[in-house]
Length: 119
Image (cartoon, rainbow, N blue to C red; front, side):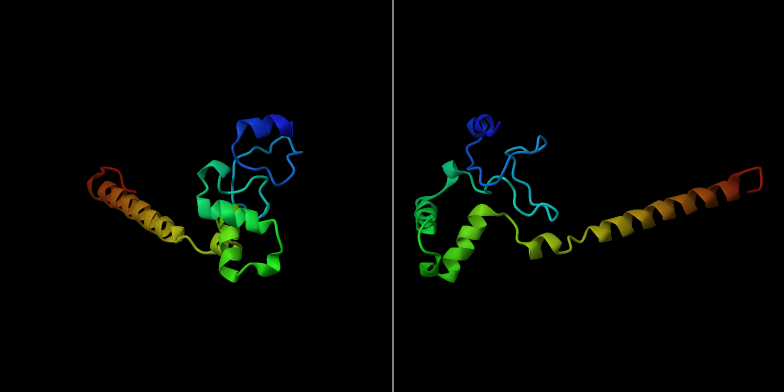
């Protein structure tokens, strides 16, 4: 099964693909922090990134902090802090709820004013 998926994707598989619902698509998830494929496709790497990947295979104590961060970004799109950060979506939810309530009160007032039956 994994061999068939390797042919379909240009990304390097780094995890297990034993579960049937797994695919070679990259997704950042808090409940499954290690996706089965890397974020950056091997075909889209620059020469600097390829050299960094080669350096990754050696001793990690020789890597600088910036190189380790660059390697992290090649493998993962977001850190846990970025995944946990607020998106500001609550503002749109509160705004939409207020607009819905305003529209409902407008309809209620219109019916109360112009309806022949009392509400």
